[in-house]
Length: 277
Image: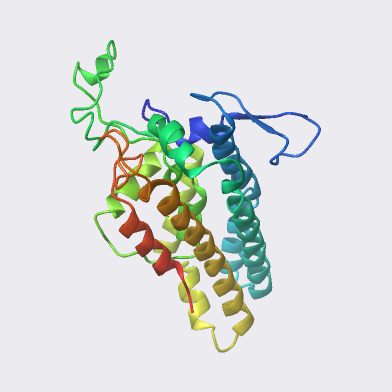
């Protein structure tokens, strides 16, 4: 991964259990490394840790569902879709707890500034020099900042559910985020995408059987709309925690994400394209 703070280093590898014998869950989690410290910063990180844990069944469920799809096993496919739906609903319940201990103003002023990268960053237009790194040939580098888009959960589900997002200026950014993920996460997403390209499209399979297997269609719709609900809550928080805040300097813009891209319109489009009738 690029040598910059990423979602993996900020969230996935940055926690511990307070009591090793108790579950991975809010109330039994602590942050290993933070910046300014404080409840708001730790809670912001730990909410994501809890979400990732609740999403832990999704990769195995996706693999099981794809196997059921290749064998045309409708009942098993419905079962795996239901498992993913339950996981998404559980993830949403955790996400809804963000405001409990992470204030919008505190997040914007004390937490967010440390997450910005040096690509498309107006305060560091030329990037950062990595002194002593011969591979960079004494040239400044521009890397994206830490972002939830570097989590593999949503991209895996988008690929699995075969959600067709329109090509926009935001699309290359989402593709670029793959390089900021751990190798195993990236390979899983690429493998799911490849299966869909090879004719194992879950969306087409479900749509073709809408009349003969309405329960399968309903299971797919429930799963996809559970993802929509999660994205909707995330979009709401982006508006509250970032977009509606009062910008005081170019280094912490309200219209540009920590990864260096405009986000409000693009996130709204991704959310709307996820909804399924």
